[in-house]
Amino acid sequence: MAPAAPRSGEAIFASVEHVNSELFTLTYGAIVRQLLTDLEDVEEVNKQLDQMGYNIGIRLVDEFLAKSNVSKCVDFKETAEVIAKVGFKMFLGITASVTNWDAEGTTCSLILEDNPLVDFVELPDTCQDLYYCNIFSGIIRGALEMVSMKTEVTWVRDMLRGDDAFELKVKLLKQVSEEYPYKDDE
Image (cartoon, rainbow, N blue to C red; front, top):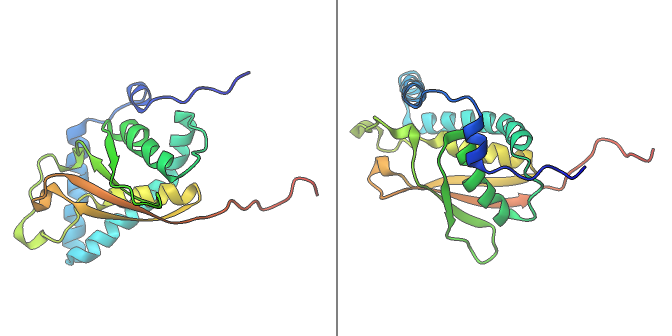
């Protein structure tokens, strides 16, 4: 039997149960607001959102691999394209474009074409240093770590801060070789 063909992000998104987008957006906003109230420091909130995203990413990758039938990517460029076109579409119904590759092929930008987390959001003057969607950087970092890629993910542009787009820079720090806990021939 031949292996199943990879499914597009759109096909997967259409086949899964959806949460009302307004409920999702408002719930995320309430979480960010509560973090701001509890932690009282915007930089700490940024760190906490990244850590929450990381914890989600290390679990989300299993569902992604199970439902998408994507085989192992050959390099970081292919991985970035799969995240942008399949991953974002599968879980959020949006896509991203991959641009700004460096010469080594280890750093790129993901530019979100839409961002459902920021509907109804305006940052007050006291929160101009907040990366409201920092959960995305943690999710990407956590998911890539589970497929043996140590990365650094940072925001370059953020429309909530007056920029013209939402842009994440993804930098591959190192490709971790897969280690198996035992040998098959023993």
